Length: 77
Image (cartoon, rainbow, N blue to C red; front, side, top):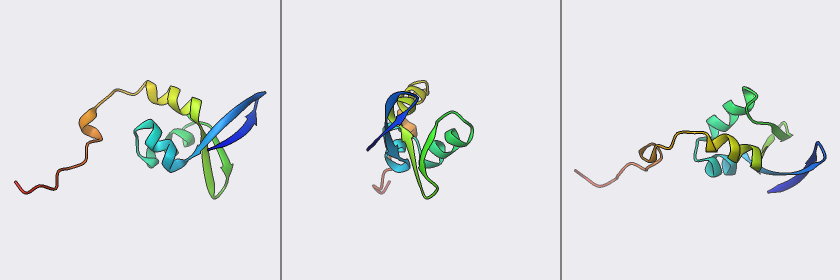
């Protein structure tokens, strides 16, 4: 996690993979939110970072579907 300054406040950022894990969504969703302007992208062209507070506020508005994130069973049926 990195700390950056934006608009007079310190911004804590996470790379895409960790941002996705924190929000409970896929990396593609994080990138989609950023491209649609729902999430601010920080970092360099090769390394995207996202504001933790902004990310958690956005993710808290998502409906909760526990089965959507459950790993598929590898047991034989």
